[in-house]
Structures are given as C-alpha cells and as structure tokens.
Length: 402
Ligand code: NIG
Ligand code: FE
Image 1 (cartoon, protein in one colour):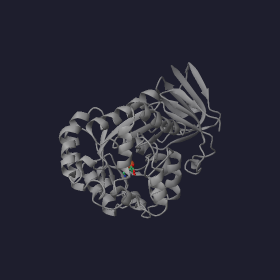
Image 2 (cartoon, rainbow, N blue to C red):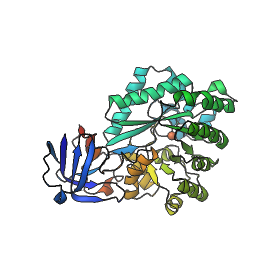
Image 3 (cartoon, rainbow, N blue to C red):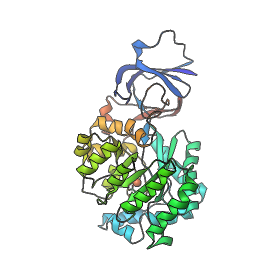
Image 4 (cartoon, rainbow, N blue to C red):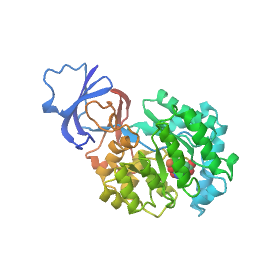
C-alpha cells in the first residue's frame, strides 16, 4: 500500500539532520520511499491512502537503546532507604539491589513477567518509542536468562515495537557463585554464550567494583566476539575501573552511564566509533554528583545517545521523555543533541542505523507525531507527553488526544 503523509513539519534526523516546514513522506507498506518538501513530491503519485498531519511535527519513532524493562516486582523499600541516606552501592553489597530483583524475577511466572513488563512497554510506546532494547540480567542462571530473553522477544510480538535484546548475564554475581566470580564468568563464556547466541542481539556487562572487573568483562567480550556477537558495556557509573577502555578495545557498539569517564576514555570511545549512552534518570535517582564528561565527548566527536534505563533500582519508571528532559537540564545537552540521542545515535548503539532512527528512504516507516510548536519542546516538558500519534511499519498504531 502506498501512503502519502502530508502537511507535516518533519525532523528527519538523517545524516544531514534535514527539517522540512511543509513536508511530506511517501511510504510503501512498512518502508519509507521518499521524504522532502511537499512542493517537490514526485509527479504522478497515486497513493492508496493520504494522511493529513495539519502541520504537526513528525520525528522518527524514538529508540530507547538501554532498558532493563523485563523484571518482576519493585524496590520501593530500597528507594525509601536511599532517600534516607543509604547508598545504592551499600544496598548492593548487602545482597539487595539487583539481587533482590533477581529473586522476584526468578519467582515470577512467564505470564506475570509479560504482564508487568508489557505495561512498561506500552508506556514507552505512548511516548512515540518504536524500538526498545531490553536486557536480561535478573535471571543469572542459563535457564532464567534464556527465559528473560524469550519474554523480551515475545513482548515484541505482542506490541508494535521492535525489540533488540542484550544478554546481561554479567550484571551481578549470583549467590550460588559467591566468592567465585571468575568461575561464573568462565561458565558464561564457555556454555551460556554459545547456548544463547541466537536468543540475543548483543552481549552486555556491568563493569564496576560492585559487579565485574575490567579483566572479567574483557574475557566475556573476547568470547562474545568470537561468536560474532556485538558487545556493549555499563561502564564508569560509580567509579572508574577501566570499562571504557575495554569497550573501546572490543569496538563496542556503546558504553553506557560514563559519569566517571575521563578525557582519555572519551578519546578511546571516539576512535572505536562507540556511542556514549547517557542515562540521566539513573544519575538523578541514585543522587550521583559526578557529571559525565559531556564536553570531552563533544570535543572528541563521540556520538551521544540518551536512554531511559528503565529498571526497578536506579531508574524506576518507563519514560524516555523524562530522560530527555533530564539529559538537557542535568547534563546540559542541547535539544538537537537530545533528539539525535533518541533517534539516529540510539539506533546506532543497537546496530540499527541503516533501518531505524531516521526518516529516510529505505528506513522503516516508524514515526511519532507531536503536538508542539518547535522540536525544542522535546526535552523541555517534564512530566507531560505531547505525542499525539505513533506509526509503526507504516501503520497508525496509536492516537492520543493532546
Ligand atoms: O543501568 N548499573 C547496573 N544496572 C542498572 C541498575 C539495575 C538495578 O538496580 O536493578 C543500571 O543502572
Ligand atoms: Fe542499565
């Protein structure tokens, strides 16, 4: 089916970041064929359907490139302790934190996991998010990690959202392996990676002194890449233990958090073409004070992405729009940086830059329509959602009164 989307104001987020004040898009089925000024529309076009946008702004469907959206339960009691002064790292060292969600997730049925995670996914979709990365990491056994990845992919079958999965077996050391972190990493390298190779789109790890060392992540990445799996890393969130350098050495698609990254780290990420994923909701929730070195990333030309980090500990909630607002207010990103951070650069962090994250010929027909006067309003509103329509693979999948 040929569809003409007309009278839209368009921010393409393509290589040239083109915008059109009176723009049009032609889609054939699920794919964009043409985008440009309405005045330049190809002659002799006979669309099967015309959608009139009445001057609304259109962006690519947003890409949330870092979430832990599949989990069971909540950690409100830990949040209360943290607001009273106990640190995120201290709670983790006591066996709470990630491990408390591991217990809840292992105990939940598939149906419960799908239901609880589905409501978070629908909340992202209502914000114009059409691609979501979901990590495992709350199972920490071969079978329960496999189940998390299965549930994540199932969510993509049940919703009009493209799901990209990351295996995050190296998220926390499971109690069964207490004191034997090297054995756990060896097992993951030797048995889990080959077994889960086709169940995930990438391999992630948490490189931190409360999690896994740079040497352990290095081993995991060597094994992942030998199997042809792309890698990415939670690096330099609470301290600098050398994660960015490991990520860069392995040509990681992304390095995420990065509050404690240095100028040298920024240079290494730039050379490797690694995307730096900013997670300001986690920064805010754990009351971090160390800001990521945004100016160094800019100077070295590191592409910046912004993601929700949706998880029950450091980023409880499911709002990419809130993350965009916080990236601007807390990290000083510009509105243009934030928009690319949730479109083109976020797609690149997932290896989807040829098909998603831009309105361009050959790309998926994924769009979000916004009731805003200017794209500067993306990341301006805090706690308000101006998305009025979501298009996924050429179909209008959601309309909201704004
Ligand atoms: O991205 N840093 C590690 N992982 C998550 C937190 C997960 C949790 O606390 O459950 C993060 O912040
Ligand atoms: Fe995370």
